[in-house]
Image 1: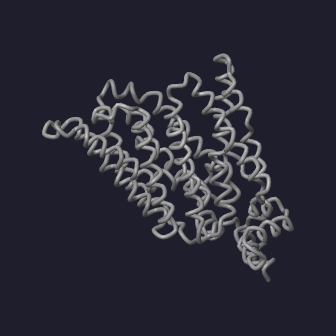
Image 2 (image 1 turned 90 degrees about the vertical axis):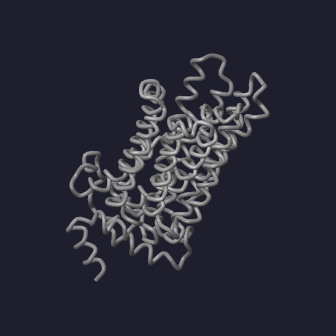
Image 3 (image 1 turned 30 degrees about the vertical axis):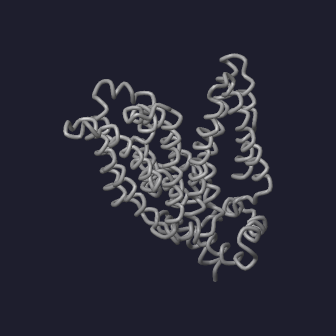
Length: 385
């Protein structure tokens, strides 16, 4: 199901529509289709990766998704430099985007389905075949045992949206939604939106060059996160990340208000922006999308991930919509100070509510956070005898 949905949500119609648009209406239709595809992919890709990845490298593989998103953003910025003087540059850029869409579609066509989803649907033989293809024949018995122990093959009906708010699941669902809310309220997109103005104050006149520098910092930080994810753990990286973001935001705020720093305000603002993006890329960027499929029970995983990603996009939309209005009313320094406060609150929230998932299978995490119902537990004990 995950494989099939990913395949369907990456057709090239939206890119072709945008690249060949002759009027605003066609362009809007193309961008709308692209947004729907990206929205679906943003929820399904981390879900699929977490469900097929071996426990010992699940963190690194999950972070690669975010890494290539960052590389794609940077590549788009760099590719735009030689085309900037061409009036039809945007058509070329939309045309280029058709290539990765085709590659993803071809790749997913030959990729195995999630064995956890197959098992949950009662397709035992297909689940075993997928496990064999992913991990090797020797792992089939071990993985199937974990799937049975977690109650994934239970007789419980599929969760509905109201189940997400039940006592059994609400705590983990609220953590997932809160992580994405804090990620956006910490100001990442506001910093990116405002970075060109910050860099101009330091004498960097090219908006594309400024954006490329921010993109490069994002890629570099995510590469570091990928190498540390299965060593340091998700929780510690989140705490380190939000702490660094808080310090960077404080530096940005001071650079705009402290008169003693006025001669260096442009340079300090650039340093603060780059450090903020680096800190974000170390944890706040890649970890939430990786952590959510890990902490959600299989019965609610798809809907809970969708709800959390919905929180991400809604908060992203409103910050983008109202950021400049808030800046005009309160001043950029005050807004950055507010972002620093959110980052500090995020550190406290993560320390008290987020569990570490490093080195643990999805089934082990599920048994701790969302134990199977009594009937499912009894059924497993009987089948294991």
